[in-house]
Image: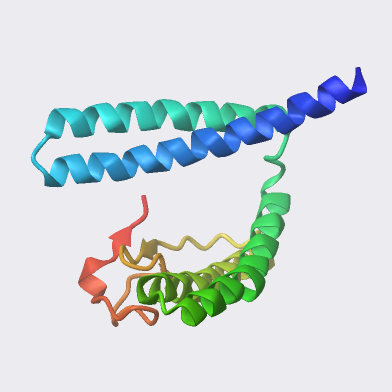
Length: 168
């Protein structure tokens, strides 16, 4: 019985990854359909993306991966740090060695943005009980997150502050 439970948990995790990936891929398809002038197809992609997200979140809940806010902050901080300090530098080295400029820029920007994400999580952990409210803005080009309204260009990719997206 134990092996079945472990296999089921492994399958739930694989299903989570698949559903989360599908949800994001479909959001990308929706953006492309909108740009190409197919609003109905974009709507379909967004609807199914939302359904895939529901599936992914259900799998996460069953796996009990979502814990207390403090535990989730700590886990997120550790994950961002691990990725910005270990994963992306390795990916970047390979892209440089292969001369893949687009991958190099993408990995470099993601690494720098992930480093900032880690700092934001650490700050949130340190000030979890404070009553302050902060608005967050995301750079649509590289994923940099800015606490408070941006007044200068993105420090990662130089996009103007007027392009940042406010997170609701």
